[in-house]
Image 1 (cartoon, one colour):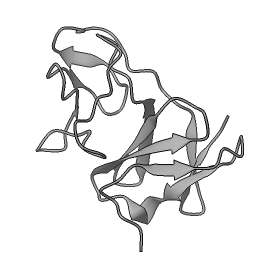
Image 2: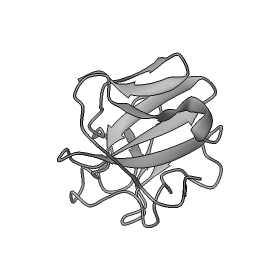
Image 3: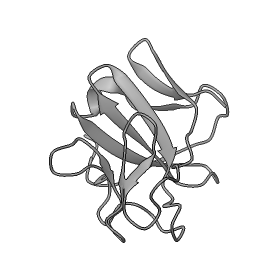
Length: 121
């Protein structure tokens, strides 16, 4: 059984690398990953929509999560930088509140295919 309180470490198989199944994420929910030697990343699920970003705050370059997989606010309506309290939209990664207001999280290209969340690149 997987421990979803820890970030998953996955072998990098390039395009098509499977991160997890959609059903592995709460709805709404988030999950962090390390894929090979790539920078850390995370995925957010809202219904059947998925959004992926690098786990790097544009303000200071720190990870967004204090605890593994804790990327969302209590209401699960925004992404939260635990270091500075910045809030980002889930759909676009735009900072709407905090020291980096107006900047964007760096997106990762992912897709949902047959119930699996995969890297595109």
